[in-house]
Length: 266
Image (spheres, rainbow, N blue to C red):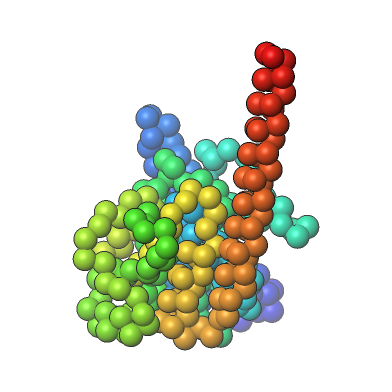
C-alpha cells in the first residue's frame, strides 16, 4: 500500500466516532449525538443521572475521583439550555463518558437535568452498549425511603445468574416498586442486555452523600472495585453539620426579625 494511503488510513482511525439520532417532540426535531474518541471492548457500562437526592450523580462523580479514569466522549443535546459546569478550573460536560481501564468500566456521568429527554438518553445508552458490546449495564439511583434512620440498598436485575452475587454483596432484592426516569426508560429499551439496577434509599431532596456512599459500598462489593467510600460518609457528615448550622442561623434570624417586628408594634 502506498505511504500516502497508509497515513490517510491512520488519520481516519484516530478520528472520534459520531453517532447521531433525530427524535420528534411536538413537531420539532431533537438532535442527540454520541461522540466517542475511544471504543473499549466488552466493558461494564455504569450510568447515574440527577434524580432524588442527586444520588446517581454524586456516586458517579465519586467513582471518577477515586478510580483512574479518562474522558473518552460525551453526549450532546442541542435542545438543552446552553449551560456548563466548571469544577476545579475545568469544564465539565453535561453528559460525559469516562473509561477505567483496570476494571474495564465505562461511566456515563450526568450533571444536567434530564426531564423531557429520558427516552432519548435511554436510546443512546442502548446504542452505546450495543456498539461497545457491553457485557452489562449498571444503573445507579436514589429512591424515596420511609425510615429516615435507615439507608437500605436494593437491586433489580434481569440476569438470574447475578442475583446471588448481588445478595452476597449485602444488597436486597427489590420485590415491589416503581422505577421511573432514565433508569425506567433504560430497563425498557435495553431489556435484551444483562442489566442491573442498584438503588439506595434517600430521605431528602437535598444532595444525599450518605445514600450515594451506600451505593458505592454495594457496587464496590459487587464489582470488586476496592474503593474506599468513607470519604463520602465524611462528606455527608460535613454537609449535615453545615446544613444544621444554616438552619439554626435561619431560625435565629427569623426569631430576631419577629422580635423587631413586635417592638415596632409595641
